[in-house]
Length: 124
Image (cartoon, rainbow, N blue to C red; front, side, top):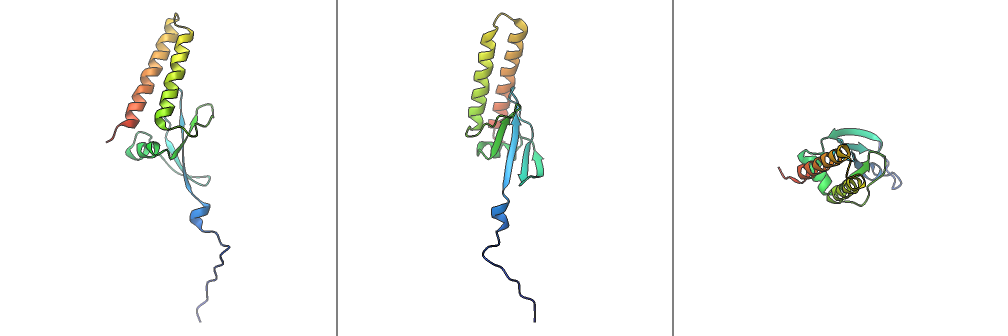
């Protein structure tokens, strides 16, 4: 007689216990570190944010974004995040408009923010 497998309704399904989650850190200049795909606490893989799959995950708001300081950016789309970064950099620029080094750094940051925004918005 073959042994019988016993399943009870109390046994959780693995799909409901472990869900894939995606995390990425966005720096103040708009650059995104690689997206981490995790299953629970286990890191499965990393993928570039500007890859086709990375852009798709970002557009679908599947990626939990965090600032370099550790502040979560929950509830914001990637476009909203870049708008917020542009606004913050413009405010910093207005603080010291007569300091040429400060102005150059802020303008460089705005260029980088725009470059990343366009790179993630493009469809390849």
